[in-house]
Amino acid sequence: MDLPPKEQAKVYSAYWRPMEQEFSGAGESQFDEFVRHYLTIKTGEIPRLDDIYDAFKTHAATFTKKDETIESLVIELRQYAGRYCAMALGKETDPALRNAFKDLDQIKADVVYPFLLDVYTDYELGTLTRDDLLEIVDLITSYIFRRAVCRMPPNSLNKTFASFSSSVRKDRYLESVKAHFLGLKSYRRIPTDAEFLASLKSADLYNFRRRSYFLRMLENHGRKERVTIEDYTIEHIMPQNEKLSNEWRAALGDDWQDVQQTHLQTLGNLTLTGYNSEYSDHAFAKKRDMEGGGFKDSPLRLNKGLGNLETWNVTAIQERAERLADDALKIWPLPVLPPETISEFQGKRSESDFSIEDHPYLLREPRRSLFEMLSAELLALDPGITRQFRKLYVAFKADTNFVDVIPQKARLILSLNIPIETLHDERGLAWDVNGKSHWGNGPTEVSLDEDTDLNYILGLARQAFEFQMGGE
Image (tube, rainbow, N blue to C red; front, side):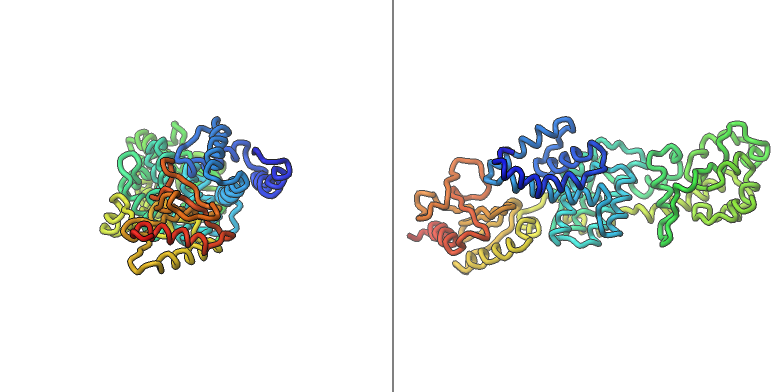
């Protein structure tokens, strides 16, 4: 870490060791996967898993070049690790959120975590509510699951979620997330209801990777007393045996082989039971009426209606598939927005669309109070001064920007639109960035945090204003 030994020991015991302990019991690659998601957020690039160490070293070097410290980097990593562990390792304390994250884990959707880490950060900062976070997690789950059922290729998902945050309007968080999902095109799009229904009714769901999650959700949707489906096994109502009995052949009709081949592994023919071995390949009537364990006596919702049927044939299979597929639409719905709202979000985001919510480092106390005091003093310099939130900074403008405030984790950077040789800075706090890569419009920068003399910094900002207005 390039720190003196005493500082290394302090950072290790205060931040790194607790982070390691949070990952205890997790898979060997879990921490590397977390760091990969963290780097995706911070760098905009998705590193290969076997390049994580080198990618993190490069990020650390870039981080410290911005006058940040190794300690602040480790603190930030520790904070993101806590969020990741809450979502991916079952450490969330809120029961509803924990269940939502569990569903996400069940569908094997690791690619969503770069976006969700940003969302969870905003939730912690109070930018969105717990109910909005829940709905966003459910929307992500629906998106991933619908695509899986419709056999849409998953290879685009990494990039979809790596860049998702750039489309979020933090002043209209939930709406912008819905609009972005609805605006995804081509191979990234979310399947329509018609596509989802058609695949649910016709696809091979017995060999579906997310089969257990699917049946658990169908069985437990709306239940307060949840059923543990792991206590049951999957039952083919029409048997898998290619040599069906005469009773089954008669029930299915002359084309019984085609019916079996087409519908055997589909939704309409699959259910759950604790009596799989007893059912064997028996005729439907025997499975239905078996004492104590037949479909008639089953407490499972998936078996609802089977006890009232006289026979099991292609019509019964299709009707049951229709009913269960309609239930699935309620569990994994499409996001809904009025067309005019969708249109609002489709174009490129203009600079006027940003707000303080887009700058998380300004939201927590005492940083927010410091920023508001600074803002009030700058706006009071002249009635014509305006404050505008931009993507990367906050602009204070008269004829043009005279001060830009760049929020960073440890401090605020003020970009002053005045040459450093013109600035009267007797304490030597400002530095020259003319000709160097930097955010903001000014050639001079100065730092401000809660321990800085605000009045002195305001004096420097006043000089930038007066320089712009042509004063001495």
